[in-house]
Length: 503
Image (cartoon, rainbow, N blue to C red; front, side):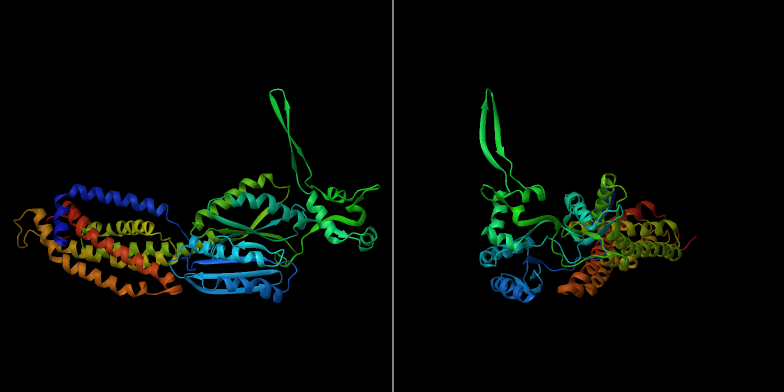
């Protein structure tokens, strides 16, 4: 089969050259669109439930919220691990699934079981499934500084301006807001006045809930036009709340008569400080699982630059964590190693082959094999990261092995004093390739087999080291195919017929 492949390549030289150009173009496109990250995604298929239980202690959260959910989630198909954390007013449950489980199917299983338990949970429980992200999804963090804004104003700016704008970007799973003071309306009842009026706290809550909505009031026909009538009752400020009626008069009793209404902040469970110099407000951009972190960070920076002119005077968005810098360091290290290894290989080829054209034919395998590897990585859904590109760097020295053997044997066959010198040029190149095809293929296969144990690793180790083995196998396989197809064609077109060893 190997000799037939070489024979076909030498017969269809133009087709092989065009295929090589197509491979180079496809590989360049794949490299330009390859997701780039610092490390491979090592997280399992994971679904998180995050619930808020206002006022509950960790013990109550464990007994009244987490325990019923755990009983329901136990036995979920393909689940491998269930763990939970109870904090003051917060329940955090994490369910890991077996490798290869579809994430959306897993989320559906958890959502169905949560829906079955939700009616039996204590009143006031809020929350649900966490965004589709991984523990490594935090790609950009920033704080809001300057402008003389209070913590409440900065939190409002983050919640109602920055967060909605960033969540519309492709690849963003969520934007978390930390620190500051979340603005809210607070009603502080006076117990003595309530008792004097014969009212309870529940009466205040019902009055606010009952009067905080807009209702439709039908339509009014006006000739050929129809006017929509509605009654506006949605609360807009503290004065609207204070004016809500509790009891008809005369005189009418309003909320402001028995309670104090003011603008305050929600109860805080923590704070964010910057450099130990005081509190600040922090935003965290969380990437969608599988998103291209490098492209996403660029989009986030661009969107923040677009929003900057519309911010209050003096307000600055100060980033303090940017995944792109980590990506540039990790990928840049491998890129430098690839470049240095390529230059070293080319220099050694020139020194030991002793012929410029032969060295160029062999050196051409390096970029073509690398581009073919990028194409295969794109087709298999791999990302360019420290491990996958590291595998390519490891394989650089081995990519030219097959081409060196084929070219060296072709140079020997093209020697005018070699046996069979009277045969046509293509026949001699074909004979030279046929002689070494099986040994070369066997050598590449043996090298690939030495890396196969890495593909048998499971769990964290498998996700971390499998990209190394896959890129090496991809690169060596591409180099072998090119050495038996393109290299004979280039040797037949470029190598000179002269005595071996001449300068």
